[in-house]
Amino acid sequence: MSFRNQRPAKRKWRGGFFRKSDILAILGFLIPLIAIALLRGGASPEAEDYTYRNCAEARAAGVAPIHAGQPGYAPHLDADGDGIACEPWPRRFW
Image (tube, rainbow, N blue to C red; front, side, top):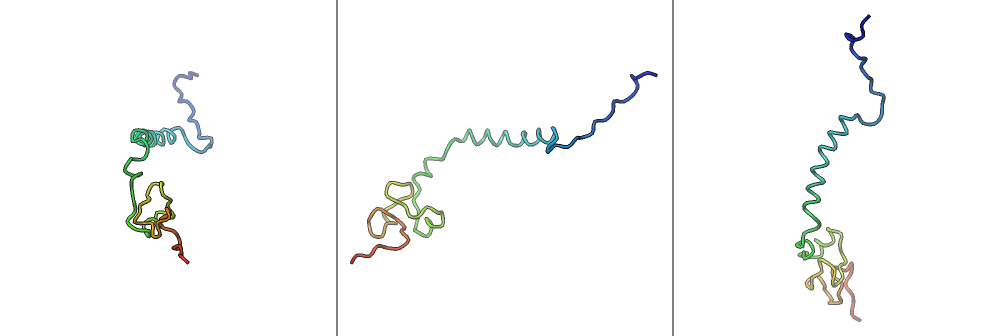
């Protein structure tokens, strides 16, 4: 009996979460995305200079209240001129 003509037994997948082909497909998708993200760098300088049109827009972005010196602060958002823009309530002068 010759063993040369016999086909090797087909291996069965023994479980595990991913097959090797699945991992290669995922890496083939993720590696270009990571490379693009690294080439773009951090946040653009325009994002740091952005000011909001009104306090409703700043609150919707989740950045209110904005203190003087923080990105997004602008004098037109500070109603009472105390250095805190888009306060939840205006200060009262008694």
